[in-house]
Length: 380
Image (cartoon, rainbow, N blue to C red; front, top):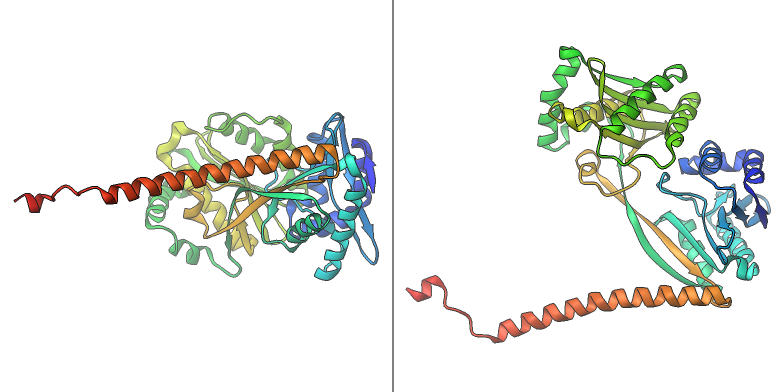
């Protein structure tokens, strides 16, 4: 078990690059590049990083933190910028060995007592063996565990799929919009054009345009203004960046920040200038980036990351559930109180839902007992 401050945590990630690279093969938000960027840009000076560690033939660890005065409440080392949190980072590939490692990690959490009496982790892959194993072992240790829903994750399995095969399966409305609107961008009429920036030396200028679009869109200002820009620079240096821009003359009117790594394209940020909505630049630019992902990068999956926005269903076909859970150690005072609060909140929610169902059923039954008014045909 390690407890580290921010500078020591940065050094720890650098020393364990191999472990984070292994995790990053499945989850880009566990890669060493993302973790270092996140800790440097987002983590605050009063964060205390709690790292249960398990060593054997391989190495496994969890990434948690608490803040000064948090009364034993530990959280996942992540925030809303990441659409997936790896509950456990491990060099073990064998499911049985990973399960044993997770059991050992949970045992270390239990031994900490009041230091980690409440653990809140999200967003997790609901179908992951690691997620299921972590929850099971916490429950077997006597902890109260409550699962909650975070959001849907929409994606497209696309290995071997060509762009034209893909577009043939799209909704007719989307296909017609793209067919009509792309001609202006393809011919360059009115100064319309599309571009995808991948090179490090062009990234800063492209991000200036991205931020101009973002400022004129419906999006709220970024709480960490440099985070997205600097992640784009890192992605460009690693060869991952796919920053799409739609222009009319010298005006950027739509922007999408994708990054592609380990055979997957991740759609990180997108926006368009609502003053140019008649151009349908968002649709045309999306198709342009899908074409690049399928035809140039030849990815096996395109991932919309966070959220159940309706437009995603027109572009991709599959949905995964992202969940979280709160685990409370009832043998500590804070853990017991928090478990009681979680249980009562969950129970009252279920009772309200059950009460609404009961009231609806009662009203339906009463209506069934009342004489029906004659129909129009019966009146005549």
